[in-house]
Length: 217
Ligand code: ZN
Image (cartoon, rainbow, N blue to C red):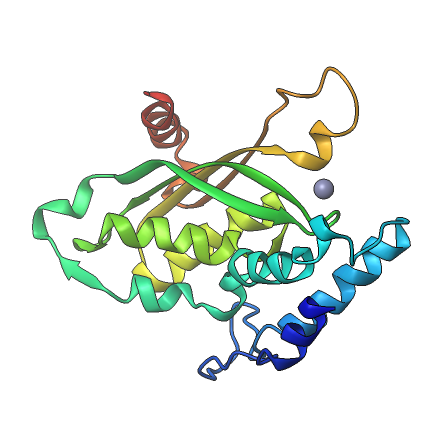
């Protein structure tokens, strides 16, 4: 029962700065003690003994993992994308970061889906952001209970909102644990989703060009 006592002494709520709610952000801190109680319940429900040696620390580990996996609920992509700089030469050139690795959690099964996002935009008047900010933006939306389709659209919409570019193209390729677990023949199945905004919506030649750049690896 040592783990139980430790659990009670732990601060159950880690404070986060409160912000105005947008992008579905949560104002609430993660209630780790509540996750730990719930994981204990799950272990008992499947017929396990949560107090046996190998499982004693499991609820705490799961709680800490969830804090990390769902950190995006308390983060705002705008904070990252606000770091902009003017690059006059960049006006007509596509800016792309491809193969951004991410891990997200399928909101239907709470199982991970992992893959790569390719993010491209066509700046307007040279208004660009750092490439690392594109990667951070992917993480802000990936680290939530998520659907791949929505993840793809949210990344694109955040770029539209904060960079005001002429166009955005986002492609996400991911393997879903919930699909892999459903029997043979689906282990390598990969889901591909796209989101196009602005000039990439209508200009098929431009869209083909940016998709070609994304595949060129
Ligand atoms: Zn799923």
